[in-house]
Amino acid sequence: MSDERIAMESTKFDRSRWADRKFSQDYRDEASYYLPFRQLFVEVTKSVVEHFLAHKTTIKLLDLGCGDGFFVERFNPGPDDDVVLIDGSNEMLEASKRRLSTYGNIRYIRSSFQELVMSDPLSEKFDLVFSSLAIHHLVQNDKFNLYRYIYDHLEENGIFINYDVVLAPSDRLEDWYISFWQQYIDRNDQTEINDRMKMIPYSYKDNPDNVPDTLEDQINALKKIGFSNIDCYFKFGVFCLFGGTK
Image (tube, rainbow, N blue to C red):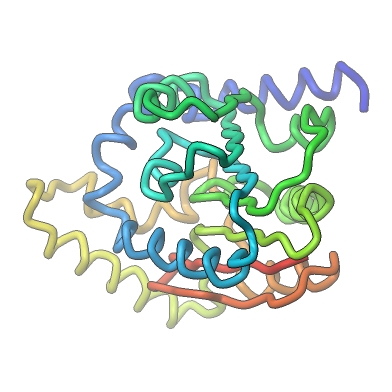
């Protein structure tokens, strides 16, 4: 792929909200207030990994769209595990480095997903590829290309797990999902609820940076690429943990 095309994709990311320092900081400060059961999603992920990678004494982990390193910290890789974190935001990578400063086995790469697919800085394969609340920023064709890239970078019997928002398959379901999510935020007494916080559930698809697809469409994409053991492992409204093995 041409250097010009790669530069265009980099510029596109730099113009998104995630390149904005304040937006990135606000996300890190408030995520635990409005992301339902985030820790539970991590625990389910760990259970899936322990089941499918029970034969591995060490693992190679790739975290795509790592954010501030929340998942890797909770996953708690061992000293002999190899970990690569990728994010398009310098702010998020710096936050990850601060959070994970006690880990000595982590490599950090700044790259958007489109740049990753086009220029591919990774020569190795991984036992686990994880992504959290990031792939929904891609249009459907780019999602498919990234899923195919992930498949190519998995070891045999490796697993891909994606924790993300998915588009509701009907308006009536979406109305309930949004209401369900708002009730979660309203019950969260750790923060003073304000009008902006109450509008967050609508932003999962109304924000121009977000282009979620249905769970069915993404599972079909994984099937077409060749993944096995494909399923939704856990779900809360629009929040879904899904994936498959190679």
